[in-house]
Amino acid sequence: MLTPLGWGTAAVSAALYAAGWWLGYPEPAVLAVAGLAAVAAAALWTLPRPRLEVRREIAPAKVGRGEPAVGVLTVTNAGRGVRGVTARDAAGSAEVAVDVPRLRPGGGRTVTYRLPTDRRGRIPVGPLRLVRADPLRLARRVREYGEPQVLLVRPRTVPLSLLPSGRAHHLDGPTSDRSPAGTATFHALREYVVGDELRHIHWKSSARTGTLMVRQLVDASLPTTTVVLEARPESWPEPDDFELAVDAVASVATAAARANFPVRVLTGTGPVADTRGGPEDVEVLLDRLTAVAPEPGPRSTVDVVRRVRAGGSLVVVAPGDAELGRVAAVRSRFDRIVVLRVRPSGPASAPPGVHVLDFGDLDALAEAWRRLGSAR
Image (cartoon, rainbow, N blue to C red; front, side, top):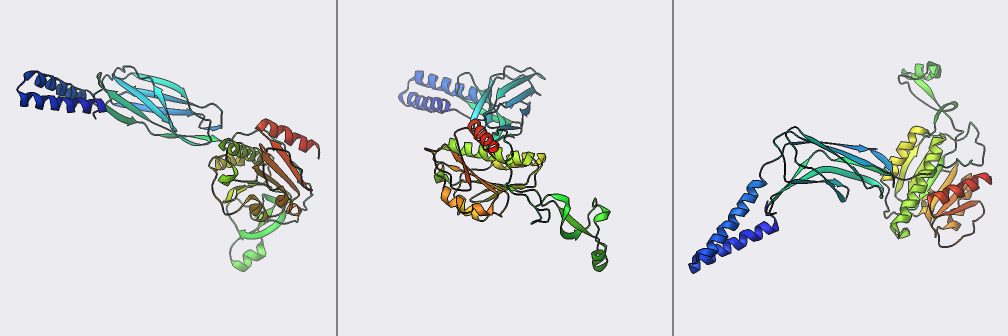
C-alpha cells in the first residue's frame, strides 16, 4: 500500500499533469509522468510476497516479575532472495527490532532479544511483522509470519517459613471434601473408582446399594492457610504498591504449599485459588495470581474475612491504612492472624491477637516474617 508520501506524490503528479495539459506546457506533464511512474514502480517493488518460515522460542515460558526472559527467533527463506525488508516482533505493547539482512534462498537468520518482564501478566509475543518498502519510501507492505506465543510473567516470591497455626488439631476434627486425602479420619462414602484400595471398601453399603462403595478418609490435622488480598482499585493509587502486595500473597501462599499445607487465596470478588497443599500446587498458585488485577468488588477485606471458614492461619495483605480494628474482631475464628501492610505512611499498634508486619519490599517482608517466626 502507498505511504503518505506516496499518496502525496501521486496527488501532486496528477495535479501537475492536469495543469500542464490545461495550460499547454509540457514540462509539468513530464514531471507528473515521472512522479506517477515512481509511484507505480514502488507499488510493484513491494508486491512480491517473501516465503519465510518463522520459528520462535521463549525461554523460559514462565518467569517471575523482573526476571530475565529471552525470545529466540529463527527466520528461514523458503523462496527467492529477500532484500529491502525490516522486521519487528511484537512483545506486549512494545516492539523489538529484528535485523533481517538479505536472505539467500534457503538461508536463515537467528536473532535473540530480551522480553519485557517488568509487569505481571500474560505477555503476547509475536507474530513477526515484515515490512517491505521501496528505496524512496513511497509504498510499504506489512505481512505477518509465525504464530504468536505467550510469556507468563508471574509474581515474584521470596522464601518464607511456615508459621505454626498455634493450635493442635485433633484427628477427628472438622473435615471437608477439600481436606487432603489421608488414612486417619472417616469423611464420607463414595463410589469405588479404579485405583482405590480394596481394604477401604464398605461391604455393607455395597451390598445394600448394589454398587461398590468405599470409605473416603481424609487427614484433618493440617490447618489451612488463608490469604486475603485487598484488591479494590481505590485502595491502591500506586500500581507498584499493588504489584508488591501480589508478590507478598504469592510468597506466603507458596511457602504454605511447599510445606504440604492447604492454601486458600481470596479477594473481594471471590476465590482466586484453593489448593490442598503440595509442591505441585506452587505452579497453580503462581499461575492463578498472574491474572489478579485491581477491580471493584462488592466486599471489603474485612467482609471477605468474615465469610472465610474458621480455623488455621489468616494472612491479610492490605495497604497502609488497613482496618486493623475490624480485622481483630474475627481473631477468635482463627489460630493466628497476620496483617501485612504495604508501604504504610506510619507505624500502627497491633490489636490483641493480631500480628502486624510493615514492609516496603520483599526483602523487608522476609526479614519481618523471620522475626515473627523466631518470636513464637
